[in-house]
Image (tube, rainbow, N blue to C red):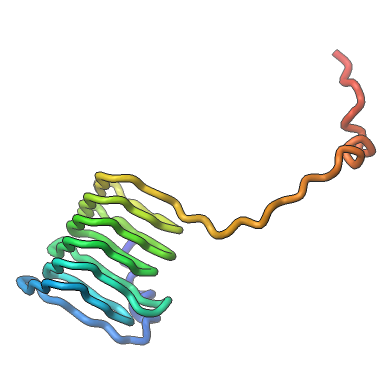
Length: 146
């Protein structure tokens, strides 16, 4: 379920995939485009450039800082807020300590979030309800027999 979509998105991200290997520690903010797969540790913010960017955090990966990406697949540890502009997938081993902001969320059994979860909605267009006289013409104002 989670893996199928990950490969589809990774291929659509201009085939530019960066890998940060297990045992690697980056101190400072990281900006990327395309796809980023993290098996190591980042101590700083993870910032995507581009609407098709995909961030994948493996079960070995860790982020100590905020994540701002359109698409994220999390299966490791995050200490900080996650801002997923489009889609967030929390896999079974995901452990998030911080607030989660998402438009679309898929959360597998076993994933944990210790923080607030906030659904982002697109700017809503106000709906206009029909005028009361329109409802009367539809027969809705008639008494209902008991």
